[in-house]
Length: 415
Image 1 (tube, rainbow, N blue to C red):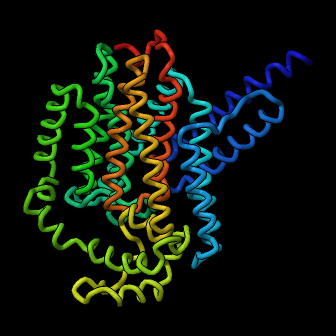
Image 2 (image 1 turned 180 degrees about the horizontal axis):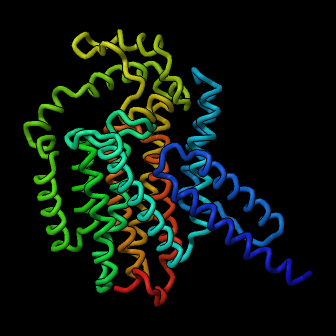
Image 3 (image 1 turned 60 degrees about the vertical axis):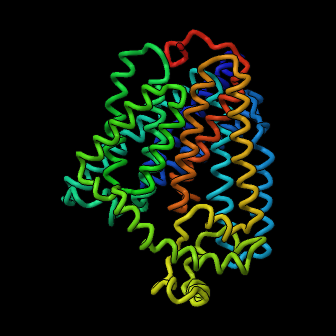
């Protein structure tokens, strides 16, 4: 009987790790909500059982906990001023608290060097599978012309701009192996998922993806100029060979900036911000579904910037947060970013092994890419938002490992 009780802890801990992994693996895939819900609530249930049996420990103590708490409390305070209170309650739970729970599950159960590598490989594998299936489905099964941007008018919830958020993150995790010495076989194998991810990223023809990718590569390989040059030249060649180059010429980009309807969209949402500058309109995303509400503020916009039909999304993460949580909410988000950057600085400055330093630099590059893409899309929910919390969780894991001696792993800890 005693032996059975002793085995319960390891079994449940393994199950919990598996369920978290399933949840992360299926993050990119649309229309698989049931699997994600089962894996999430299954993880929470197993965690509760483990805690009740005292077979595990679980900590909320991180440098990000304070800004997270402030962000949640401000979102809850906004309920008193929310225009759509039921949806605000729903979204605080579904699009904030659940993401935060995944963050804490990751830092508590992928807390070692080896598990960090497992998490990284899991993200690469899942996103590469998604990135391989998507163009096959779109161009082969649906029969869309290759000139059409990937994801345009899809029977799924994930738009083209969101696809590149996922693929660029996984691509950076794949390419960062080239910041390590040795591992020639591993590097050769990595070319396959990297090629798939690059192709799918460019096939979306998302203009925001190019500056995000370039900035991220420069940041990731800032100490490896030779590899940086190789990658940038490679990207340039691939762009020139694929039928997407016309969307990235200086003339096209200048034209897009001058005619992009996002400017008109932002004018409308700026009018909302002016009327709700402190608390915002509430965290609920469905508030944007009120046509009369949007029409009211669209009419206040100068005629040359007024939209014929107001868009229901700001298409900008920062505008979105400010509309829904006011400038206070935006300031707290900036506080979160500040804490992440300070953690990265500590890792780079005080880290006792090169593993944490090299991966911290990669994650800073990934964060920069996410922040740049957020200028052109509302990445506040869904798979794209989960990427943000994955980046933060992985950075926190590295921060917790910064003072440990690097073990002799068979993975990417060699320098």
